[in-house]
Amino acid sequence: MPRVSLTHDNEQVAAVLEEIGDLSDLKGENPFRAVTFRAAARAIRDLREPLRVLMEQKRLSEIPKVGPAIAEAIEQLLTTGTAKRHEELKAQVPPGLLMLLRVPGVGPATARTIHKTLGITTIDELEAAAKTGRLRTLPKFQAKTEENILKAIGSLRQRTGRALVVDARAAAAEMVAWLRERCDPPQMVVAGSVRRWRETIGDVDIVVAADAAGPIMEAFVAAPGVERVIARGDTRSSVVVERGLQLDLRVVPPASYGAALVYFTGSKAHNVHLRGLALKKKLLLNEYGLYRVGEEKDGTPIASRTEEDVYAALGMDWIAPELREDRGEIEAAVAHELPDLVELGDIRGDLHAHTSWSDGRDTVAEMAERARGKGYEYIALTDHSVALGMTKGLTEDRIRARNVEIEAVNRRLAPFRVLIGSETDIRASGKLDYDDRLLGMFEVVTASVHSSFAQARDVMTKRILGAMEHPRVNAISHPTGRLLEKRDAYEVDLEAVIQAAVRTKTRLEVNGGPERLDLSDIAVRRAMEVGAMLVCNSDAHAIEELDQMEYAVATARRGWATKESVQNTMALTELRRHLEGKG
Ligand code: DGT
Ligand code: CA
Ligand code: CA
Ligand code: ZN
Image (tube, rainbow, N blue to C red):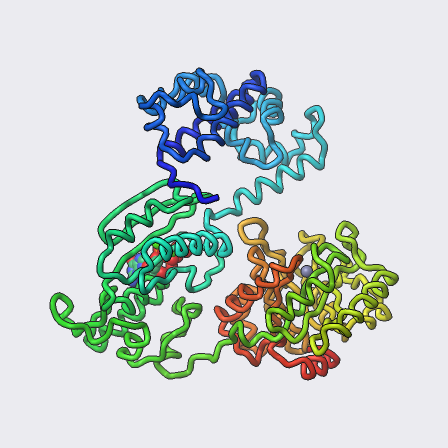
Protein backbone atom coordinates (compact mmCIF):
# COMPACT_ATOMS: atom_id res chain seq x y z
CA MET A 1 0.00 0.00 0.00
CA PRO A 2 2.84 2.51 0.57
CA ARG A 3 2.91 5.15 -2.09
CA VAL A 4 6.19 6.35 -3.45
CA SER A 5 6.73 10.06 -2.92
CA LEU A 6 4.55 12.10 -5.20
CA THR A 7 5.99 15.18 -6.69
CA HIS A 8 4.52 18.61 -6.60
CA ASP A 9 3.75 18.33 -10.34
CA ASN A 10 1.64 15.21 -10.03
CA GLU A 11 -0.58 16.68 -7.35
CA GLN A 12 -1.01 19.99 -9.17
CA VAL A 13 -1.85 18.36 -12.47
CA ALA A 14 -4.35 16.05 -10.75
CA ALA A 15 -6.01 19.04 -9.09
CA VAL A 16 -6.38 20.91 -12.40
CA LEU A 17 -7.81 17.85 -14.15
CA GLU A 18 -10.34 17.51 -11.36
CA GLU A 19 -11.29 21.14 -11.73
CA ILE A 20 -11.73 20.66 -15.47
CA GLY A 21 -14.19 17.90 -14.59
CA ASP A 22 -16.11 20.19 -12.23
CA LEU A 23 -16.16 23.08 -14.69
CA SER A 24 -17.32 20.84 -17.49
CA ASP A 25 -20.17 19.62 -15.27
CA LEU A 26 -21.04 23.17 -14.27
CA LYS A 27 -21.20 24.16 -17.90
CA GLY A 28 -23.53 21.25 -18.55
CA GLU A 29 -21.35 19.32 -20.95
CA ASN A 30 -21.66 15.57 -21.45
CA PRO A 31 -21.15 14.16 -17.92
CA PHE A 32 -19.03 11.35 -19.35
CA ARG A 33 -16.29 13.90 -20.04
CA ALA A 34 -16.09 15.01 -16.39
CA VAL A 35 -15.99 11.39 -15.26
CA THR A 36 -12.98 10.75 -17.49
CA PHE A 37 -11.07 13.78 -16.23
CA ARG A 38 -11.69 12.78 -12.60
CA ALA A 39 -10.63 9.20 -13.25
CA ALA A 40 -7.40 10.45 -14.85
CA ALA A 41 -6.77 12.68 -11.83
CA ARG A 42 -7.16 9.67 -9.54
CA ALA A 43 -4.79 7.60 -11.66
CA ILE A 44 -2.19 10.37 -11.51
CA ARG A 45 -2.42 10.53 -7.73
CA ASP A 46 -1.67 6.80 -7.65
CA LEU A 47 1.34 7.09 -9.95
CA ARG A 48 4.69 5.90 -8.72
CA GLU A 49 6.69 8.08 -11.10
CA PRO A 50 6.90 11.83 -11.67
CA LEU A 51 4.72 12.93 -14.61
CA ARG A 52 7.62 14.89 -16.02
CA VAL A 53 9.67 11.74 -16.47
CA LEU A 54 6.74 10.01 -18.17
CA MET A 55 6.30 12.98 -20.48
CA GLU A 56 9.97 13.03 -21.46
CA GLN A 57 9.84 9.32 -22.22
CA LYS A 58 6.60 9.84 -24.19
CA ARG A 59 4.78 7.43 -21.89
CA LEU A 60 1.88 9.61 -20.71
CA SER A 61 -0.60 7.45 -22.62
CA GLU A 62 0.42 4.49 -20.45
CA ILE A 63 -1.39 6.10 -17.53
CA PRO A 64 -4.83 4.52 -17.09
CA LYS A 65 -7.68 6.77 -18.34
CA VAL A 66 -5.30 9.18 -20.07
CA GLY A 67 -6.25 9.48 -23.74
CA PRO A 68 -4.79 11.89 -26.31
CA ALA A 69 -6.83 14.92 -25.12
CA ILE A 70 -5.87 14.52 -21.48
CA ALA A 71 -2.24 13.74 -22.37
CA GLU A 72 -2.17 17.00 -24.29
CA ALA A 73 -3.56 18.91 -21.31
CA ILE A 74 -0.91 17.35 -19.07
CA GLU A 75 1.88 18.32 -21.46
CA GLN A 76 0.59 21.88 -21.61
CA LEU A 77 0.41 22.09 -17.82
CA LEU A 78 3.93 20.74 -17.36
CA THR A 79 5.48 22.99 -19.99
CA THR A 80 3.50 26.24 -19.70
CA GLY A 81 1.73 25.97 -16.35
CA THR A 82 -1.73 26.24 -17.92
CA ALA A 83 -3.95 24.03 -20.04
CA LYS A 84 -6.01 25.38 -22.95
CA ARG A 85 -9.11 23.37 -22.06
CA HIS A 86 -8.96 24.61 -18.45
CA GLU A 87 -8.60 28.26 -19.46
CA GLU A 88 -11.50 28.04 -21.92
CA LEU A 89 -13.83 26.54 -19.35
CA LYS A 90 -12.83 29.08 -16.70
CA ALA A 91 -13.75 31.86 -19.11
CA GLN A 92 -17.19 30.33 -19.65
CA VAL A 93 -18.21 29.48 -16.09
CA PRO A 94 -18.76 32.19 -13.43
CA PRO A 95 -15.89 31.82 -10.94
CA GLY A 96 -18.09 31.61 -7.82
CA LEU A 97 -19.81 28.46 -8.99
CA LEU A 98 -16.78 26.33 -8.21
CA MET A 99 -17.02 27.57 -4.62
CA LEU A 100 -20.67 26.49 -4.45
CA LEU A 101 -19.54 22.92 -5.13
CA ARG A 102 -17.69 23.00 -1.82
CA VAL A 103 -21.01 23.07 -0.02
CA PRO A 104 -21.86 19.42 0.72
CA GLY A 105 -25.16 18.57 -0.96
CA VAL A 106 -24.66 21.04 -3.80
CA GLY A 107 -23.64 19.14 -6.92
CA PRO A 108 -23.05 20.58 -10.40
CA ALA A 109 -26.69 20.29 -11.48
CA THR A 110 -27.90 22.08 -8.35
CA ALA A 111 -25.26 24.77 -8.67
CA ARG A 112 -26.27 25.32 -12.29
CA THR A 113 -29.95 25.69 -11.42
CA ILE A 114 -29.19 28.05 -8.54
CA HIS A 115 -27.04 30.18 -10.77
CA LYS A 116 -29.39 30.25 -13.76
CA THR A 117 -32.56 31.08 -11.86
CA LEU A 118 -31.30 33.24 -9.01
CA GLY A 119 -28.03 34.59 -10.38
CA ILE A 120 -26.13 33.32 -7.32
CA THR A 121 -22.37 32.91 -7.64
CA THR A 122 -21.00 33.07 -4.08
CA ILE A 123 -21.49 31.15 -0.84
CA ASP A 124 -22.62 34.37 0.88
CA GLU A 125 -25.34 34.89 -1.73
CA LEU A 126 -26.34 31.25 -1.41
CA GLU A 127 -26.69 31.65 2.35
CA ALA A 128 -28.78 34.80 1.99
CA ALA A 129 -31.09 33.08 -0.51
CA ALA A 130 -31.53 30.08 1.78
CA LYS A 131 -32.30 32.30 4.76
CA THR A 132 -34.94 34.28 2.92
CA GLY A 133 -36.60 31.16 1.53
CA ARG A 134 -35.78 31.92 -2.09
CA LEU A 135 -34.14 28.54 -2.71
CA ARG A 136 -37.31 26.62 -2.06
CA THR A 137 -38.99 28.37 -4.96
CA LEU A 138 -36.72 26.41 -7.30
CA PRO A 139 -37.95 23.18 -8.88
CA LYS A 140 -37.18 20.08 -6.79
CA PHE A 141 -36.13 22.24 -3.81
CA GLN A 142 -37.84 21.87 -0.46
CA ALA A 143 -37.60 23.64 2.86
CA LYS A 144 -35.54 20.66 4.00
CA THR A 145 -32.96 21.12 1.21
CA GLU A 146 -32.67 24.76 2.15
CA GLU A 147 -32.10 23.83 5.78
CA ASN A 148 -29.42 21.30 4.77
CA ILE A 149 -27.63 23.90 2.68
CA LEU A 150 -27.64 26.35 5.59
CA LYS A 151 -26.26 23.67 7.89
CA ALA A 152 -23.57 22.78 5.38
CA ILE A 153 -22.53 26.42 5.01
CA GLY A 154 -22.44 26.77 8.79
CA SER A 155 -20.11 23.80 9.13
CA LEU A 156 -17.94 25.03 6.25
CA ARG A 157 -17.46 28.30 8.16
CA GLN A 158 -16.84 26.38 11.38
CA ARG A 159 -13.66 24.87 9.98
CA THR A 160 -10.45 26.49 11.06
CA GLY A 161 -8.31 24.39 8.76
CA ARG A 162 -6.75 22.71 11.78
CA ALA A 163 -6.60 18.93 11.87
CA LEU A 164 -8.21 16.68 14.45
CA VAL A 165 -5.64 15.22 16.86
CA VAL A 166 -6.56 11.73 15.71
CA ASP A 167 -5.64 12.50 12.08
CA ALA A 168 -2.48 14.40 13.02
CA ARG A 169 -1.36 11.54 15.27
CA ALA A 170 -1.98 8.98 12.53
CA ALA A 171 0.10 10.97 10.03
CA ALA A 172 2.84 11.56 12.62
CA ALA A 173 2.95 7.86 13.55
CA GLU A 174 3.29 6.84 9.91
CA MET A 175 6.23 9.22 9.40
CA VAL A 176 7.92 8.19 12.65
CA ALA A 177 7.65 4.51 11.69
CA TRP A 178 9.13 5.25 8.29
CA LEU A 179 12.05 7.24 9.73
CA ARG A 180 12.71 4.44 12.25
CA GLU A 181 12.80 1.90 9.48
CA ARG A 182 15.05 4.01 7.26
CA CYS A 183 17.48 5.65 9.72
CA ASP A 184 16.60 4.45 13.21
CA PRO A 185 17.63 7.69 14.94
CA PRO A 186 18.37 7.10 18.63
CA GLN A 187 15.99 9.81 19.83
CA MET A 188 12.85 10.98 18.06
CA VAL A 189 9.73 12.59 19.49
CA VAL A 190 6.61 14.18 18.05
CA ALA A 191 6.64 17.56 19.81
CA GLY A 192 4.46 20.68 19.34
CA SER A 193 0.72 20.68 19.93
CA VAL A 194 0.53 16.92 19.27
CA ARG A 195 2.71 16.22 22.31
CA ARG A 196 0.62 18.65 24.35
CA TRP A 197 -2.57 16.89 23.13
CA ARG A 198 -4.16 20.12 22.05
CA GLU A 199 -7.65 19.44 20.71
CA THR A 200 -6.81 20.48 17.15
CA ILE A 201 -3.45 20.58 15.40
CA GLY A 202 -2.01 23.20 13.06
CA ASP A 203 1.02 21.17 12.00
CA VAL A 204 3.06 18.23 13.27
CA ASP A 205 6.54 18.91 14.68
CA ILE A 206 9.00 16.03 14.78
CA VAL A 207 12.27 16.47 16.68
CA VAL A 208 15.19 14.09 16.10
CA ALA A 209 18.54 14.05 17.87
CA ALA A 210 21.36 12.89 15.60
CA ASP A 211 24.91 13.84 14.71
CA ALA A 212 24.31 13.69 10.96
CA ALA A 213 21.10 15.25 9.67
CA GLY A 214 21.54 14.46 5.96
CA PRO A 215 20.21 10.90 5.78
CA ILE A 216 17.21 11.76 7.98
CA MET A 217 16.26 14.75 5.84
CA GLU A 218 16.56 12.58 2.76
CA ALA A 219 14.30 9.91 4.19
CA PHE A 220 11.80 12.51 5.42
CA VAL A 221 11.18 14.16 2.05
CA ALA A 222 11.07 10.77 0.32
CA ALA A 223 8.53 9.25 2.70
CA PRO A 224 5.47 7.52 1.25
CA GLY A 225 2.46 9.78 1.52
CA VAL A 226 4.45 12.99 1.04
CA GLU A 227 2.52 15.01 -1.51
CA ARG A 228 4.65 18.11 -1.58
CA VAL A 229 7.99 19.29 -0.20
CA ILE A 230 7.74 22.85 1.12
CA ALA A 231 11.29 23.25 2.35
CA ARG A 232 14.36 21.10 2.56
CA GLY A 233 17.22 22.43 4.65
CA ASP A 234 20.25 21.17 6.55
CA THR A 235 18.50 20.82 9.89
CA ARG A 236 14.90 21.64 9.11
CA SER A 237 12.44 20.45 6.45
CA SER A 238 8.70 20.67 5.89
CA VAL A 239 6.41 18.50 3.81
CA VAL A 240 2.69 18.25 3.15
CA VAL A 241 0.92 14.91 3.36
CA GLU A 242 -2.68 13.81 2.89
CA ARG A 243 -5.46 16.32 3.50
CA GLY A 244 -2.98 19.19 3.35
CA LEU A 245 -1.44 18.40 6.73
CA GLN A 246 2.06 19.83 7.20
CA LEU A 247 4.87 17.95 8.95
CA ASP A 248 7.97 19.82 10.18
CA LEU A 249 11.19 18.00 11.02
CA ARG A 250 14.09 19.39 13.01
CA VAL A 251 17.33 17.54 13.56
CA VAL A 252 19.29 18.72 16.60
CA PRO A 253 22.62 17.66 18.10
CA PRO A 254 22.13 14.98 20.80
CA ALA A 255 23.64 17.30 23.42
CA SER A 256 20.80 19.81 22.82
CA TYR A 257 17.97 17.30 22.76
CA GLY A 258 16.30 18.30 26.04
CA ALA A 259 16.42 22.03 25.31
CA ALA A 260 15.14 21.46 21.77
CA LEU A 261 12.32 19.35 23.10
CA VAL A 262 11.25 22.06 25.54
CA TYR A 263 11.43 24.63 22.77
CA PHE A 264 9.55 22.67 20.10
CA THR A 265 6.95 21.25 22.45
CA GLY A 266 5.85 24.76 23.34
CA SER A 267 3.42 26.20 23.70
CA LYS A 268 4.82 29.49 22.56
CA ALA A 269 3.24 31.16 25.59
CA HIS A 270 4.87 28.60 27.90
CA ASN A 271 8.25 29.17 26.24
CA VAL A 272 8.02 32.94 26.47
CA HIS A 273 7.18 32.74 30.17
CA LEU A 274 9.97 30.22 30.78
CA ARG A 275 12.52 32.39 29.01
CA GLY A 276 11.43 35.41 31.07
CA LEU A 277 11.89 33.43 34.25
CA ALA A 278 15.37 32.37 33.09
CA LEU A 279 16.36 35.95 32.34
CA LYS A 280 15.47 36.99 35.89
CA LYS A 281 18.09 34.46 36.98
CA LYS A 282 20.53 35.92 34.41
CA LEU A 283 20.13 32.82 32.30
CA LEU A 284 19.34 32.47 28.65
CA LEU A 285 17.13 29.65 27.39
CA ASN A 286 17.05 28.76 23.71
CA GLU A 287 16.61 25.60 21.65
CA TYR A 288 20.27 24.61 22.27
CA GLY A 289 20.37 24.90 26.02
CA LEU A 290 20.25 27.00 29.16
CA TYR A 291 23.24 29.34 29.35
CA ARG A 292 24.61 32.06 31.60
CA VAL A 293 23.82 35.30 29.81
CA GLY A 294 26.74 36.15 27.53
CA GLU A 295 27.96 32.57 27.27
CA GLU A 296 25.31 31.39 24.80
CA LYS A 297 27.64 31.80 21.80
CA ASP A 298 30.56 29.64 22.85
CA GLY A 299 30.08 28.58 26.45
CA THR A 300 28.88 25.19 27.65
CA PRO A 301 25.22 25.15 28.63
CA ILE A 302 24.22 24.66 32.26
CA ALA A 303 21.58 22.22 31.07
CA SER A 304 20.49 20.91 27.67
CA ARG A 305 20.56 17.13 27.40
CA THR A 306 17.17 16.24 28.91
CA GLU A 307 14.01 18.17 29.68
CA GLU A 308 14.31 17.29 33.36
CA ASP A 309 17.80 18.86 33.42
CA VAL A 310 16.49 22.09 31.89
CA TYR A 311 13.52 22.48 34.24
CA ALA A 312 15.62 21.47 37.26
CA ALA A 313 18.30 24.04 36.40
CA LEU A 314 15.54 26.65 36.40
CA GLY A 315 14.56 25.53 39.89
CA MET A 316 11.33 23.83 38.90
CA ASP A 317 9.72 20.41 38.61
CA TRP A 318 9.40 18.81 35.20
CA ILE A 319 6.07 19.83 33.64
CA ALA A 320 3.88 17.36 31.77
CA PRO A 321 3.48 18.51 28.13
CA GLU A 322 -0.34 18.61 28.48
CA LEU A 323 0.04 21.46 30.99
CA ARG A 324 2.39 23.65 28.96
CA GLU A 325 -0.04 26.38 27.98
CA ASP A 326 1.04 29.07 30.45
CA ARG A 327 -2.09 28.56 32.50
CA GLY A 328 -0.32 28.63 35.86
CA GLU A 329 1.81 25.51 35.43
CA ILE A 330 5.10 27.42 35.65
CA GLU A 331 4.21 29.02 38.98
CA ALA A 332 3.01 25.63 40.24
CA ALA A 333 6.24 23.92 39.13
CA VAL A 334 8.34 26.54 40.91
CA ALA A 335 6.30 26.03 44.09
CA HIS A 336 6.49 22.21 43.62
CA GLU A 337 2.70 22.17 43.60
CA LEU A 338 1.90 20.64 40.24
CA PRO A 339 -1.15 18.36 40.35
CA ASP A 340 -0.61 14.61 40.33
CA LEU A 341 -2.30 14.06 36.96
CA VAL A 342 -4.51 11.10 36.15
CA GLU A 343 -2.80 8.61 33.83
CA LEU A 344 -4.10 6.19 31.23
CA GLY A 345 -2.77 3.36 33.41
CA ASP A 346 -5.00 4.50 36.30
CA ILE A 347 -8.13 3.71 34.29
CA ARG A 348 -9.80 0.49 35.44
CA GLY A 349 -12.77 0.43 33.10
CA ASP A 350 -14.95 2.26 30.63
CA LEU A 351 -18.42 3.55 31.51
CA HIS A 352 -19.75 4.54 28.09
CA ALA A 353 -19.73 2.15 25.15
CA HIS A 354 -22.23 0.81 22.62
CA THR A 355 -22.92 -2.63 21.18
CA SER A 356 -24.83 -3.93 18.18
CA TRP A 357 -27.92 -3.86 20.41
CA SER A 358 -28.08 -0.16 19.49
CA ASP A 359 -25.78 1.66 17.08
CA GLY A 360 -22.52 -0.11 17.89
CA ARG A 361 -20.84 -2.51 15.49
CA ASP A 362 -19.72 -5.26 17.85
CA THR A 363 -21.45 -7.66 20.24
CA VAL A 364 -21.62 -7.61 24.04
CA ALA A 365 -19.06 -10.44 24.17
CA GLU A 366 -16.68 -8.77 21.72
CA MET A 367 -16.75 -5.45 23.57
CA ALA A 368 -16.27 -7.18 26.94
CA GLU A 369 -13.39 -9.31 25.74
CA ARG A 370 -11.59 -6.35 24.23
CA ALA A 371 -12.08 -4.33 27.43
CA ARG A 372 -10.73 -7.20 29.49
CA GLY A 373 -7.83 -7.52 27.06
CA LYS A 374 -6.97 -3.88 27.76
CA GLY A 375 -6.53 -4.80 31.40
CA TYR A 376 -9.83 -3.30 32.54
CA GLU A 377 -11.88 -4.72 35.43
CA TYR A 378 -15.21 -3.61 34.02
CA ILE A 379 -17.11 -2.00 31.16
CA ALA A 380 -20.56 -0.45 31.22
CA LEU A 381 -22.42 -1.14 27.98
CA THR A 382 -24.60 1.91 27.58
CA ASP A 383 -26.73 1.31 24.53
CA HIS A 384 -29.12 4.09 23.56
CA SER A 385 -32.64 4.62 24.89
CA VAL A 386 -35.77 4.48 22.73
CA ALA A 387 -36.01 8.11 21.57
CA LEU A 388 -33.13 7.58 19.23
CA GLY A 389 -35.27 5.54 16.87
CA MET A 390 -32.67 5.50 14.17
CA THR A 391 -30.09 3.98 16.50
CA LYS A 392 -32.29 1.07 17.57
CA GLY A 393 -32.85 2.29 21.11
CA LEU A 394 -33.65 -0.38 23.68
CA THR A 395 -37.29 -1.12 24.54
CA GLU A 396 -38.05 -2.93 27.81
CA ASP A 397 -38.11 -6.29 26.03
CA ARG A 398 -34.76 -5.66 24.43
CA ILE A 399 -33.26 -4.43 27.72
CA ARG A 400 -34.23 -7.83 29.19
CA ALA A 401 -32.94 -9.76 26.20
CA ARG A 402 -29.63 -7.91 26.35
CA ASN A 403 -29.40 -8.68 30.08
CA VAL A 404 -29.53 -12.40 29.34
CA GLU A 405 -26.55 -12.02 27.07
CA ILE A 406 -24.69 -9.84 29.57
CA GLU A 407 -25.24 -12.37 32.36
CA ALA A 408 -23.81 -15.17 30.25
CA VAL A 409 -20.75 -13.09 29.39
CA ASN A 410 -20.29 -12.15 33.04
CA ARG A 411 -20.35 -15.82 34.07
CA ARG A 412 -17.74 -16.63 31.47
CA LEU A 413 -15.41 -13.67 32.05
CA ALA A 414 -15.63 -13.28 35.86
CA PRO A 415 -14.16 -11.55 37.77
CA PHE A 416 -14.30 -9.11 34.85
CA ARG A 417 -17.70 -7.43 34.93
CA VAL A 418 -20.04 -6.03 32.30
CA LEU A 419 -22.21 -3.41 33.97
CA ILE A 420 -25.76 -3.02 32.69
CA GLY A 421 -25.76 0.50 31.37
CA SER A 422 -27.85 3.00 29.47
CA GLU A 423 -27.18 6.18 27.59
CA THR A 424 -30.55 7.76 28.21
CA ASP A 425 -31.69 10.61 26.06
CA ILE A 426 -32.71 13.87 27.69
CA ARG A 427 -35.68 14.85 25.54
CA ALA A 428 -36.29 18.41 24.37
CA SER A 429 -38.89 18.76 27.12
CA GLY A 430 -36.28 17.87 29.73
CA LYS A 431 -37.95 14.55 30.40
CA LEU A 432 -35.74 11.48 30.47
CA ASP A 433 -36.45 8.89 27.84
CA TYR A 434 -37.08 6.10 30.39
CA ASP A 435 -39.42 6.29 33.36
CA ASP A 436 -38.13 5.60 36.87
CA ARG A 437 -39.06 1.94 36.73
CA LEU A 438 -37.01 1.35 33.58
CA LEU A 439 -34.13 3.50 34.82
CA GLY A 440 -34.08 1.23 37.86
CA MET A 441 -33.10 -1.68 35.64
CA PHE A 442 -29.63 -0.25 35.01
CA GLU A 443 -26.46 -0.24 37.09
CA VAL A 444 -25.06 2.81 35.26
CA VAL A 445 -27.03 5.59 33.59
CA THR A 446 -25.38 8.33 31.60
CA ALA A 447 -27.76 10.98 30.27
CA SER A 448 -27.20 13.06 27.17
CA VAL A 449 -28.67 15.52 24.71
CA HIS A 450 -28.94 14.30 21.12
CA SER A 451 -31.70 16.53 19.75
CA SER A 452 -33.07 20.09 19.67
CA PHE A 453 -29.61 21.60 19.90
CA ALA A 454 -30.94 25.04 19.01
CA GLN A 455 -32.87 25.58 22.26
CA ALA A 456 -32.43 28.86 24.10
CA ARG A 457 -29.67 28.89 26.69
CA ASP A 458 -31.92 28.90 29.76
CA VAL A 459 -34.13 26.14 28.33
CA MET A 460 -31.13 23.93 27.55
CA THR A 461 -29.57 24.60 30.95
CA LYS A 462 -32.79 23.67 32.73
CA ARG A 463 -33.11 20.58 30.56
CA ILE A 464 -29.67 19.31 31.62
CA LEU A 465 -29.91 20.37 35.28
CA GLY A 466 -33.23 18.53 35.52
CA ALA A 467 -31.56 15.30 34.41
CA MET A 468 -28.75 15.84 36.91
CA GLU A 469 -31.25 16.09 39.75
CA HIS A 470 -32.52 12.59 38.98
CA PRO A 471 -31.19 10.09 41.52
CA ARG A 472 -30.61 7.40 38.87
CA VAL A 473 -28.51 9.58 36.54
CA ASN A 474 -24.86 8.93 37.33
CA ALA A 475 -23.30 11.15 34.69
CA ILE A 476 -23.92 13.58 31.87
CA SER A 477 -22.25 12.52 28.63
CA HIS A 478 -20.56 14.93 26.22
CA PRO A 479 -22.02 17.84 28.23
CA THR A 480 -21.70 20.58 25.58
CA GLY A 481 -22.51 18.65 22.39
CA ARG A 482 -19.74 20.23 20.36
CA LEU A 483 -18.21 18.49 17.35
CA LEU A 484 -14.76 19.86 16.57
CA GLU A 485 -14.53 21.57 13.18
CA LYS A 486 -18.19 20.67 12.59
CA ARG A 487 -20.67 21.92 15.10
CA ASP A 488 -20.52 24.46 17.91
CA ALA A 489 -21.50 23.53 21.43
CA TYR A 490 -25.17 24.17 22.12
CA GLU A 491 -25.96 27.23 24.20
CA VAL A 492 -25.76 26.20 27.83
CA ASP A 493 -24.71 27.75 31.13
CA LEU A 494 -21.75 25.46 31.67
CA GLU A 495 -20.88 27.11 34.97
CA ALA A 496 -24.34 26.17 36.28
CA VAL A 497 -23.85 22.59 35.03
CA ILE A 498 -20.49 22.34 36.78
CA GLN A 499 -21.94 23.71 40.03
CA ALA A 500 -24.87 21.31 39.78
CA ALA A 501 -22.43 18.43 39.31
CA VAL A 502 -21.00 19.17 42.75
CA ARG A 503 -24.41 19.62 44.38
CA THR A 504 -26.09 16.56 42.87
CA LYS A 505 -22.98 14.34 42.83
CA THR A 506 -23.46 13.77 39.12
CA ARG A 507 -20.30 13.02 37.19
CA LEU A 508 -19.37 15.07 34.13
CA GLU A 509 -18.00 13.04 31.28
CA VAL A 510 -14.82 13.74 29.42
CA ASN A 511 -15.73 12.02 26.16
CA GLY A 512 -12.74 10.69 24.21
CA GLY A 513 -14.39 10.65 20.77
CA PRO A 514 -11.76 12.54 18.75
CA GLU A 515 -14.37 14.95 17.40
CA ARG A 516 -15.89 15.52 20.82
CA LEU A 517 -13.25 15.88 23.56
CA ASP A 518 -16.18 17.08 25.61
CA LEU A 519 -15.83 18.42 28.31
CA SER A 520 -12.97 20.50 26.92
CA ASP A 521 -9.70 21.05 28.76
CA ILE A 522 -10.81 24.50 29.92
CA ALA A 523 -14.12 23.18 31.29
CA VAL A 524 -12.30 20.35 33.07
CA ARG A 525 -10.06 22.91 34.71
CA ARG A 526 -13.10 24.78 35.99
CA ALA A 527 -14.61 21.52 37.25
CA MET A 528 -11.39 20.83 39.16
CA GLU A 529 -11.45 24.30 40.71
CA VAL A 530 -14.92 23.85 42.14
CA GLY A 531 -14.60 20.17 43.02
CA ALA A 532 -16.89 18.67 40.38
CA MET A 533 -16.06 15.05 39.63
CA LEU A 534 -15.40 13.45 36.26
CA VAL A 535 -15.64 10.20 34.37
CA CYS A 536 -13.37 9.54 31.38
CA ASN A 537 -15.09 7.52 28.65
CA SER A 538 -14.41 6.24 25.14
CA ASP A 539 -18.00 6.26 23.81
CA ALA A 540 -16.79 3.36 21.67
CA HIS A 541 -19.10 2.09 18.94
CA ALA A 542 -16.64 -0.68 17.96
CA ILE A 543 -13.86 -2.57 19.73
CA GLU A 544 -11.01 -0.44 18.36
CA GLU A 545 -12.71 2.70 19.59
CA LEU A 546 -12.20 1.61 23.17
CA ASP A 547 -8.72 3.07 22.57
CA GLN A 548 -10.33 6.52 22.47
CA MET A 549 -9.97 6.43 26.25
CA GLU A 550 -6.49 7.84 25.66
CA TYR A 551 -8.01 11.04 24.25
CA ALA A 552 -10.36 11.39 27.18
CA VAL A 553 -7.51 11.01 29.66
CA ALA A 554 -5.29 13.44 27.74
CA THR A 555 -8.06 16.06 27.72
CA ALA A 556 -8.64 15.53 31.45
CA ARG A 557 -4.90 15.96 32.04
CA ARG A 558 -4.93 19.21 30.07
CA GLY A 559 -7.56 20.35 32.55
CA TRP A 560 -5.30 19.41 35.51
CA ALA A 561 -7.46 16.41 36.51
CA THR A 562 -6.12 14.07 39.17
CA LYS A 563 -6.73 10.34 39.56
CA GLU A 564 -9.01 10.99 42.54
CA SER A 565 -11.34 13.15 40.45
CA VAL A 566 -11.95 10.45 37.83
CA GLN A 567 -14.58 7.86 38.71
CA ASN A 568 -13.36 5.01 36.55
CA THR A 569 -10.01 4.86 38.30
CA MET A 570 -11.92 3.11 41.10
CA ALA A 571 -11.81 -0.64 41.62
CA LEU A 572 -15.07 -2.46 40.83
CA THR A 573 -16.38 -2.85 44.39
CA GLU A 574 -15.79 0.77 45.27
CA LEU A 575 -17.28 1.86 41.95
CA ARG A 576 -20.50 -0.08 42.50
CA ARG A 577 -20.93 1.44 45.93
CA HIS A 578 -20.44 4.88 44.43
CA LEU A 579 -22.85 4.27 41.57
CA GLU A 580 -25.59 3.44 44.04
CA GLY A 581 -25.03 6.76 45.77
CA LYS A 582 -24.94 8.46 42.33
CA GLY A 583 -21.28 9.26 41.61
P1 DGT B 1 -0.01 24.25 16.16
O1 DGT B 1 1.00 23.73 15.20
O2 DGT B 1 -0.65 25.51 15.74
O3 DGT B 1 -1.03 23.22 16.52
O4 DGT B 1 0.73 24.61 17.54
P2 DGT B 1 2.23 24.36 17.96
O5 DGT B 1 2.32 24.66 19.40
O6 DGT B 1 2.68 23.01 17.52
O7 DGT B 1 3.02 25.51 17.21
P3 DGT B 1 4.11 25.52 16.05
O8 DGT B 1 4.06 24.31 15.19
O9 DGT B 1 3.98 26.82 15.38
O10 DGT B 1 5.49 25.55 16.81
C1 DGT B 1 5.96 24.44 17.55
C2 DGT B 1 6.59 24.93 18.80
O11 DGT B 1 7.74 25.74 18.51
C3 DGT B 1 5.69 25.84 19.60
O12 DGT B 1 4.79 25.12 20.40
C4 DGT B 1 6.68 26.62 20.40
C5 DGT B 1 7.84 26.77 19.47
N1 DGT B 1 7.77 28.09 18.83
C6 DGT B 1 7.31 28.37 17.61
N2 DGT B 1 7.41 29.68 17.37
C7 DGT B 1 7.92 30.24 18.47
C8 DGT B 1 8.28 31.58 18.85
O13 DGT B 1 8.11 32.52 18.11
N3 DGT B 1 8.79 31.75 20.10
C9 DGT B 1 8.98 30.71 20.96
N4 DGT B 1 9.49 30.95 22.17
N5 DGT B 1 8.66 29.46 20.64
C10 DGT B 1 8.14 29.22 19.41
CA1 CA C 1 2.76 22.37 15.36
CA1 CA D 1 5.38 23.71 13.20
ZN1 ZN E 1 -22.73 7.25 23.40
